[in-house]
Amino acid sequence: MVGSSSLVLSPRALQASDKKLQKLSFIVITDTHVGYRDQDGAANRWERMATELAREKGDLILHLGDVVDGGRESQYPIYLKSRKKIGIPVHEIPGNHDPEELFSRYVRKQIDTVVNYDWLRFLLLNNAHTDSHDGFLTEEQLDWIDKHCKQAARENKLVAICMHVPAHKNQHPDRGWYVKPKNGQTKLYEIIRKYEKQVLALMHGHFHNGLRGWNDHSPVHEICFPSALYNLNRNLEKQKALGYNPKEFRPGYTLVTIDAGNMKLTYKPLGAPASVSKMCPLQQKETSFNEGS
Image 1 (cartoon, rainbow, N blue to C red):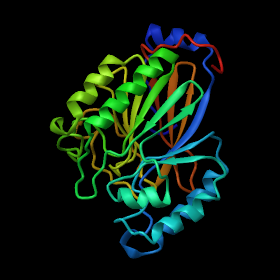
Image 2 (cartoon, rainbow, N blue to C red; image 1 turned 90 degrees about the vertical axis):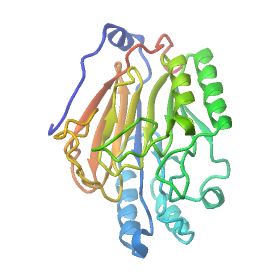
Image 3 (cartoon, rainbow, N blue to C red; image 1 turned 30 degrees about the vertical axis):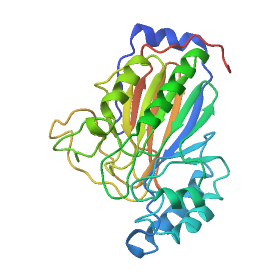
Image 4 (tube, helix red, strand yellow; image 1 turned 135 degrees about the vertical axis):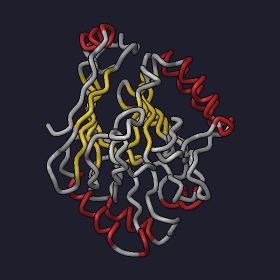
């Protein structure tokens, strides 16, 4: 497979594969930007993608923000019309192009929410402002994350935190858009360190750089997913930027499979065969639960 990469499993992760976790399969999309430049191109691409997603195997879909472009209210019904074609649950969060008031009116009234999926719990929250590319977490949101991580630890579940803007500090040659320390990054990482055996991943959109991720906060994976509209090759790996950025930048979505101690990310360009993949091991996780628990 072109550009595929993998990491060596630790002994703890190898043990995880013997615990018979229920295999999970879901899909991640982001940055559809319906209404982009006041033209029909983004909506047409989203319609084609929705038709394609209806044929994919996965129990649910996460949409990690920027549902429409520039807060264009008229585009939400267009987005939702195509979404109906998919046939499985789609769980969105707002991006910096999605005003909270409009997202709440058209997509989901309760914006910060929990989605339980077998032994995995998704925490979906809005950390984006329409007037900034940076991310922002309130004290109330941080307490909410802490509460649900604590609950997951009691229930022996893993957690994936879904926010449009990454928390990871990224500097040139990266974009430099993230949750700054004064805006909640410091406390968020304190919570993650406290519950690192429960937190599987931080999942984001926003970057339009294909599959972009970091593993320097291992065992927690931090991932920006490819945009459904467009992606840019910033030559990050060539410039030795921290983390990974496989060479695939076509508009697309990501197939995610968690099985045998690994989370496999497969980049699926729109209208083309699956391309690059990334293997993310579930190291040092609490995995002593029964299949289907």
